[in-house]
Image 1 (cartoon, each protein chain N blue to C red):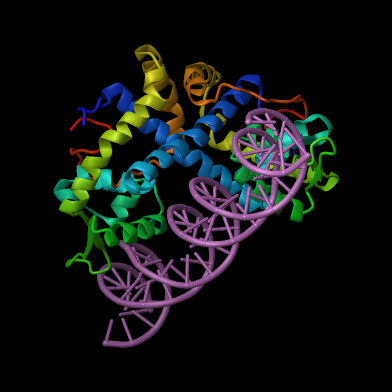
Image 2: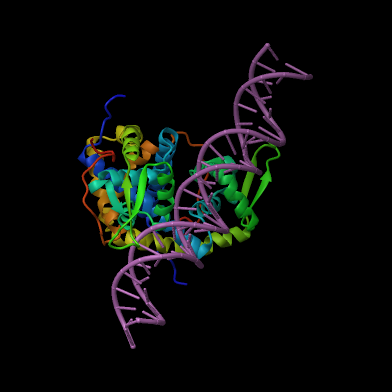
Length: 168
Length: 168
DNA sequence: GAAAATTATTTGAACTCGCAAGTATTGAAG
DNA sequence: CTTCAATACTTGCGAGTTCAAATAATTTTC
């Protein structure tokens, strides 16, 4: 076994901070969504992506990609969301293996009702504690890391809707 | 319901990047540790913190705090680690409610054997893709966010051991 | 000094997710 | 045109996390 390339002081400091952020943020978001909306962070993400998609619909594969989730994870989540009546899944005539997930009216209302509380929570946890300069600096500084982590391919689709912490 | 304070463009961009990082990093670390060491990220964290503690021991409460985990989460993890023989739990004579977790020799060997692969993975996922300047910039820029998220109190203990991505 | 509140930790049940295997359906090879 | 492989998705099982409740010991209160 080769002698490991240990982290230097700065690297270690960054690594520990990344771990803190990656531990706290998802837990905090999950707790708020569960308490106020009865949704998982991932389920919220699924609804949000559908709400922004053309026709409020996306193929399951694409939906899995834009939500950064495995197909399995999405399938489990989709079953739950469908049981609640928030989405529907229909076979594609052209390719009967494929399925298209569509946000129902009820699902639209769900995400529209849930979004404000979610955004408010994100604000109170994150942005209320940061100046505009700090936000800008972090946004720039974190970009290379995101590039390092994200898969390069992008079978994406058209966007332009609601329900993310963006405006209505 | 008040009209929500939506996120502006920069805030939204930062938020989405934070979500990407918070989604990918833990999953990636978990997968490597599970495959190569049969450990959870959290279990690894527990062993690492014990390895750095005075006498390789910490009270459960303190251990929960330094690992950023709930007492319940720690208790479940401790049971698994104890079953594997990597830690032991002993009652405190002074206060017989309290328990002290201690790293066994076997546990010490476990973390020492697991650390190099873990660090190598962290390098290959994160630091190999970043310049020293990018690391330094991100380390500075992320600090205010960490301050915002971390609880202020700190019932910490003495440190100074091994097994974190730090040096041996 | 007994009852009530607090602290330290554990346990059980519910739920989510990852993995491996399973089901269709389509496309490629021969 | 049959066989084999690849695609699109689903499902069952196991494992970890959380929440609420339980246990147990200490400290406070009256």
